[in-house]
Amino acid sequence: MARAQQEQREESELIERLVSINRVAKVVKGGRRFGFAALMVVGDGRGRVGFGTAKAREVPDAVKKATEQAKRNMIRVPLREARTIHHDVTAADGAGRVSLRSAPSGTGIIAGGPMRAIFEAVGIQDIVAKVTGSNNPHAIVNATMGALKKMQSPRQVAARRGKKVSDVIANREAARSAAEVATAVAEAE
Image (cartoon, rainbow, N blue to C red; front, side):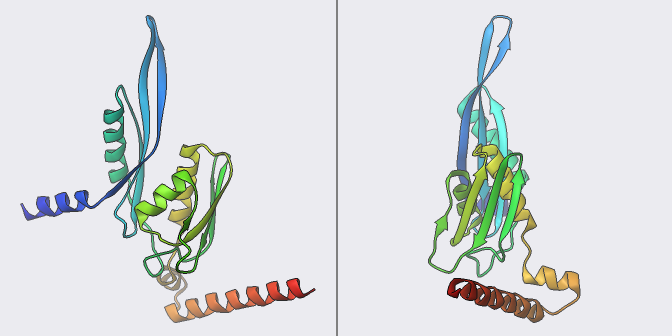
């Protein structure tokens, strides 16, 4: 009984965002049968997010089915300071390409449409994102989720390389300062 109450409480805390709704038609002998396709994003605001697509004859049914699929397909995304991503990442789905960049505190979510829904659901507060190519919501959501799946925390990198977390973070800071110096030299010339 306690397990069922806990699951009910977790489900009530989920953030649900309707990304797109599309009217679709099936041609049959007597004409066209219309239905609706929904694209939903669901997250807990603390690093878990998922998306789902579903079709039904009525909009509420399509939204409900897509939400259930999104809850089943949730992934965990490592966040830095529970507000941004650990590193810059790019991904593509079909002709849609996304580029995600970590941002300092106070930047906010600089992203459009479907990407904004995902970032709000996962709990990211500071990020800069850009879509190039196709602006199809399905392609953008797939590419953004692919980019978030690539995300690795310094702890995961350290475990994979057999190093200490402090070594990985020190290397990241050294690379960042070297890039800043190179940028400053290029601007001075």
